[in-house]
Image 1: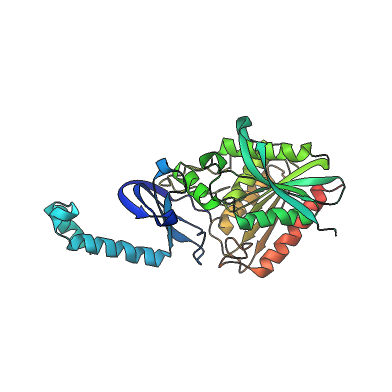
Image 2: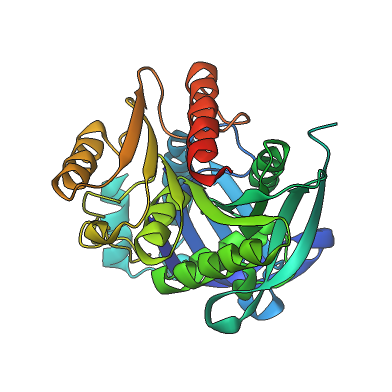
Length: 101
Length: 247
């Protein structure tokens, strides 16, 4: 199906995008739908974008659901292993994340 | 050659008179003929759907696809425009009706037009095809596995859509529905519900459901392509449009 499952989230960081140029990323759009390029019926898609620079300022990824979950676990694991004060978590938050892994 | 055609990108008046991009394909032969509005799926105004537009021209119809994402990202690549549309909340139903209405009016304005226009859509476009047929003067509509014509969209979705149950009594033209029995969006039960509503209101419809076929079975580049369902489906579409748009 063309799913309607979409979440926008504000991001702060950078991405390397069109023409191999870095740009500041301000918005992430996460959705589950038909991919444009990946060979799967549906994929978990993330657009890292800066809408102020126009629709082409976008780094798009399309991941199978299984690999997207592995990515989420990897991100959580790396963040949990970083010193709490560097990863932006309080001690109690870091403990909660660590317990979930 | 009977299947010679021309194809072009043009500007048409969409909802509210907005100028939007559209892709049009027209048979080369000189005759009077019907028209087909093709509604692209949510991933965009893409190459695969433009191929469908050209196929309808080879079948003898003036065929047009409005770019439903044009306002979100004028001139952008189709995938970038689709992403921009999604991030801004998707295509509003009222705007869809206006854009399809503008596309139908453009087809009827052509010197080759016999005045008859049908609509066809795939995936989200299948729902939008039914939506258009409930709100516009059209002569035939085809719904290819559109989700949420019936059924209830999950409330947590950021893209707010509703089903079309309250609009179905207003369906103004015959409906051809093509569905895969392995699909869950729409599920066979939701197709049953749609069929029951159409029966209750005395609407003309023709449904074909394919065993072993899932969602997007027409999509030749996709992993769920079903040659048997797609071949039969195309034959059903050709017959349906010939019946309601020909002459």
